[in-house]
Image (cartoon, rainbow, N blue to C red; front, side, top):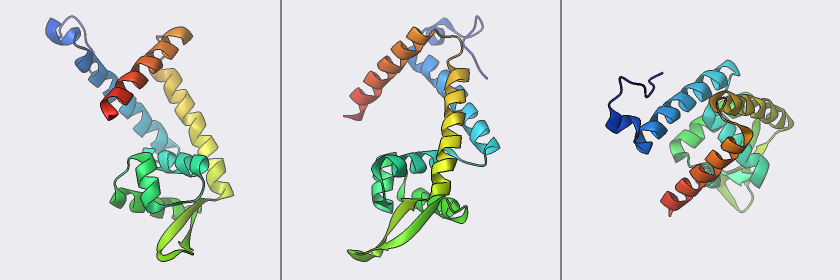
Length: 149
């Protein structure tokens, strides 16, 4: 992993955008590696979490809830359906649309992936105290909410 050290130009070493980018690259690598080891992808976790939180949903709603592009939602749902983690049924009010439902196997897999996510957080934030982790989360939430407007 790249890191900001004495060889990194000072202008970069103290630029929050540069530091956030480095942390993001490290986080992305951890997520990719750990989900792959668990036989999953980040999209799978996002979709299963949305189904768990919001209940049965259309593919379009899942895309909106997760920020995943429509074509990527379909591909990820195909993968989840092949593993029997979700079920697709025609929407009674619009037979052209599918309603996606989390299966009991999907709920169990989501719990397994949540353990993976929790371990990723611990590894990513290892140098920080519990209070620093909470503060970082608060600050990042404020930044993302501000820029989502």
